[in-house]
Length: 178
Image (cartoon, rainbow, N blue to C red; front, side, top):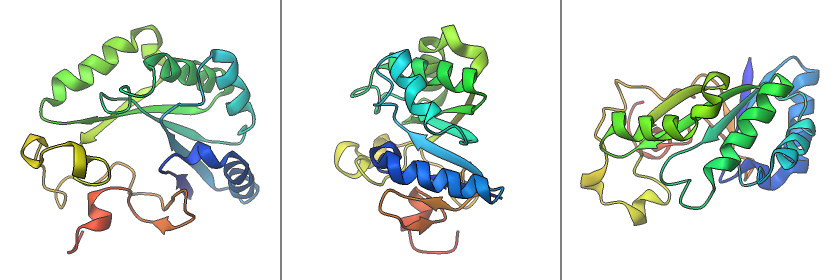
């Protein structure tokens, strides 16, 4: 069994996150958290933050052109290094628009110094959240959400509002059978 914590930005509620992760660990439930790494400005800051979440099983780091517009790729590198040293499984998640190979390779190139310390997950940008206002729908890579399931759908997610959801993307807000 596992539970994922997502946002907005889950690390904005660190105290609640620490408590929830400990409660899950006490009940033999694995945990994952998705973050943009705003808190990892230095390696030391990343170490301190992840040590406070010592029972965390997996960390999912958002890294793509949308997140790196606001957060330095160095923050992602700091988080990857800290997670590796603390034995926390690390995934880098790339959301792409219309050129998956180029956009994924671009992030992998920027993370070359830590390439053996993480796994990469990727999916098209979903027409939700900021994408509704910032991206024209014809620029989004089309995929059939009924045939390509979300890579995070195997665990319930708890968002920063405390809501339990099955998915943090399009299938959660588009009506129909998914």
